[in-house]
Length: 145
Image (cartoon, rainbow, N blue to C red; front, top):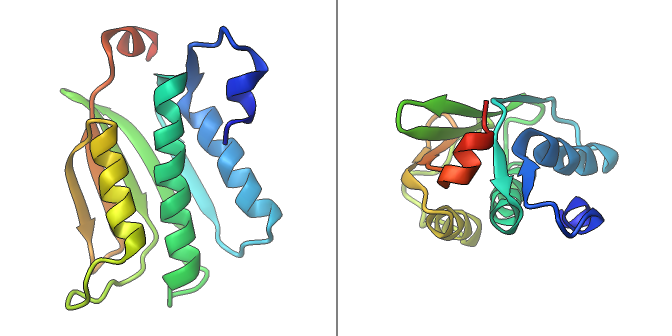
């Protein structure tokens, strides 16, 4: 995840879609049998902050592979602009046991979402959808189009 953060030490911003596609490509090379659909608006995130987004996505993908009982359902990842910032939506169609305690992975995701200043974190246990909203710094927002 850190590869292109070190390519140019003066690179303050990284395009989120590019970063996520590189991470997803690593999963595809491991011959993971999931179709992964990406729909991400153009947004550039500060390099020191984007690592947390990568960790969030990595944990979500790892949880899907480890726990999904509905194998081969497509995974969709979307980051869309809203009136007040951005919304991140990850859907893997896996049902979560509503009576079980949140595992380490879900707790880690919550902590990382908090770390980036995310709000309205939600896990729809019936449909397998993680979502949260976040804002960008003014300089990040200026780079988004």
